[in-house]
Amino acid sequence: MSIFSGLLAAWISADPTPSGSPTADPSLITTSPGTIGWVMTALVAVGAVFLIFDMTRRIRKVRYREEILESISEEQAALEEAAELAREQAARDHDKR
Image (cartoon, rainbow, N blue to C red; front, side, top):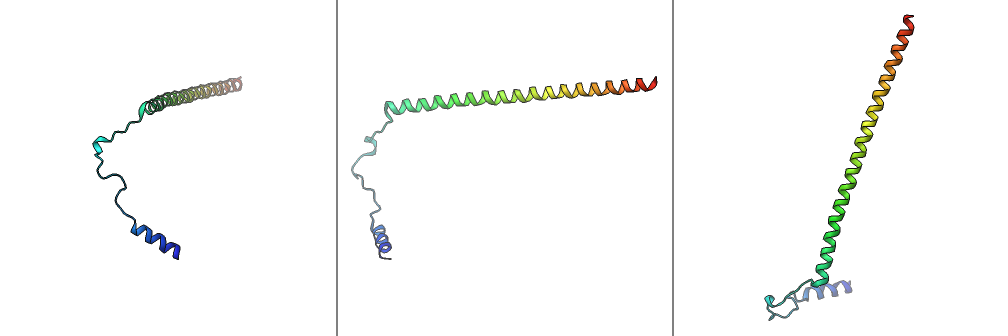
């Protein structure tokens, strides 16, 4: 318990004020990402745009594939139905003879 009480006492006695210079004027302090920061930000933005276009292209391709497969399956179902009707008609014609 002595370690805990020592840490608690140190935490309570800690000064809550910032340790920076109180006389520094915030308007005089300037920070900038610099040239490297601007270049890296531009690269990330270009990469994000590229990924968005690539994702859109891939989603469109998958959607077109699904539409094509659906139309092919509809055509196959229509052909199978027509073949079944032809078999039934042939069976009826054969029974009439």
